[in-house]
Amino acid sequence: MDFDLPDELQELQATVRRLAQDKVKPRAREIDETGEYPQDLFEIFRDAGLLGLCIPTEYGGAGAGILGLTIAIEEVAKYSNTAALMLLLTRLPTGPVMIAGSEEQKKQYLPGIADGSLRAGFGLSEPQAGSDVMGMRTKAVQDGDDWVLNGTKCWMSGVVQADWYTVFAKTSADVTARKHDAITAFIVDRSLPGVSVGSTDRKMGVRGVDTGELLLDNVRVPSSKVIGEVGGFQLAMQGLNSMRPIVAARGIGLAEGALMYATEYVQQREAFTKTIADFQGIQWEIAKLAVDIEAARLLTYRAAWLADRGQFTKEWVPYLSMSKYFATELAVNASNVALQLLGAAGYMKDHLTELYYRDAKQLTIVEGTSQVQLGLIARGVLDRDLWWD
Ligand SMILES: Cc1cc2nc3c(=O)[nH]c(=O)nc-3n(C[C@H](O)[C@H](O)[C@H](O)COP(=O)(O)OP(=O)(O)OC[C@H]3O[C@@H](n4cnc5c(N)ncnc54)[C@H](O)[C@@H]3O)c2cc1C
Image (cartoon, rainbow, N blue to C red):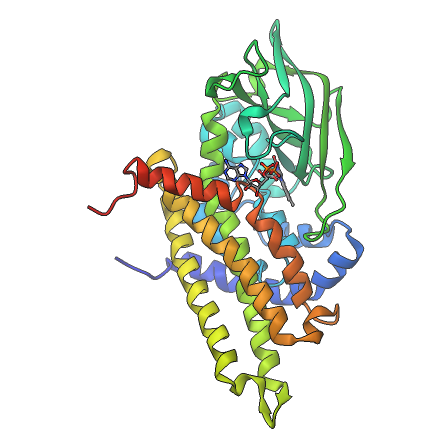
């Protein structure tokens, strides 16, 4: 067993750490205030080669895998979860293409993500179907060599900026069918007639990258844009399973950033003739978060390592879900404790703690809520995928 990151990933970590301190940290508050897409950060990430971290080298990426992207996101999320989301979006919609796409699809859609000339979004959720994916109503009907898509996707991150979308739709005759083979994944180009962006959401946090609706009105998608097989719903699940450490990294980075911020504050804030940091009650809060951060990192790096080995099928799900569950709940807790440690100052926009607090909460909701993750972990134990005997 070796707990050291390989040399190239240590170098990546050091590089992204510097970039996050120099370029992301100074922009975090402004991005939140204006809610405007930080195109400057996108270009900085592009120039640093970070947009292609998880894209294989044969398709123009760095081939650093899920672990490489996880490490980069952890660094960036110390200061801005919006910036972390921009990096995450290089994997969420491309995951199904990398896992099951045709060679033609990989050549057409992956290099553009790596070089920043294309952006993509991931369309699974619908107004009536979030956790209950099988409840989706977006329908695809075959017509000659095309599929005709109709429906509405919602809460899609990056929907406004995306050039193409990975969209899941019911391909069964009965749109209410709840069998897994009823759902198929498609690549939908933004430029196709009938594709439009609907309303965008007014969010509590992670402002700067819009979430919103994707409207599909009689969109004709060629059969060559089916990802994997018709009825290949497992794709959605495998794509999401392999994403767990990447979302977890957003939580870990946020928790690290919030704890470091609050620690610096309590070491200089005086009260009762000491500094706040001198009180044992405060020290224990810091210590408990430090333990949880390191536990989350171990769970998450292992999950990323598993995912890079292709171990994201059912028997590995509990290990992947644990990282997402633990790290994102940690982010909520850490941001809450950090804000409390600053007292009134922490509640004001003069400090980053209120931003960490608002940004953290969506992490326990996106890409499978905490309750969904707990269900998956429990299923792993009940089915003996996770067993210690
Ligand atoms: C900021 C943000 C960005 C997002 N980006 C995307 C995106 O890019 N693409 C996309 O497709 N979606 C996206 N989503 C949507 C997200 O994936 C869904 O919100 C999530 O899957 C939960 O679905 P829901 O909101 O409909 O909640 P619901 O499914 O309605 O759940 C409501 C509550 O009930 C709980 N619950 C539901 N079922 C169970 C159960 N069986 N057992 C116990 N508890 C349960 C949930 O945990 C939750 O607490 C985004 C959401 C947010 C907030």
